[in-house]
Image (cartoon, rainbow, N blue to C red; front, side):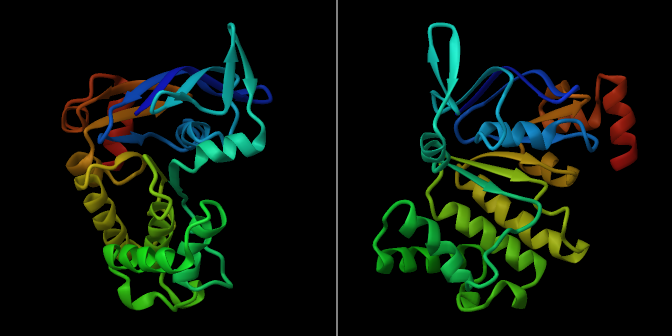
Length: 250
């Protein structure tokens, strides 16, 4: 589903990604872990072309993301064409980014109606199904200001799912939440993984990674230092840098 080949990205003189190569099979969950500034979120944003890449190739379901290839050169897609690719890739951010003037239901139906030209009645039925799926069937008419952080994040997940994505990206979806609200979001993500959704999750929740992920990659300094089965990597890391990081978070 996802193939990254020698992906590099710099911001000015700061090289954030250094030739990253990773693959994620269809239906697989990959967790990216590592210290702040290691390039995890930037890599995630490159997958749906919220950030451009300086070198390398990123493909989702066989399609080159953000560019067209002509000979051995890449030409960036027009914004409209890049946005069209993005429809197949759901993303959930640290901050919930809900429209504050819209109810939970209105937040969820906005993109299917405006972008996919979905029938409004059908979009509302689908939105109610998704709210029930994330445990918020009774919050359809609530505005974000009247929802807890965990509830807002679950609405954000439902909103991403409303576009029927092939792939879901999660950028530290629980880091902005109070500790007692983390579990309700992780439970929804576990159910999503069990349903067969392909997911890439940037997270500090090692218990979630151990339980749900099919593979885990530890990043530091813009490179993948170590990757493999999450239970193996977490229990018996082979690289000194991985051991040092895990000793502080486990």
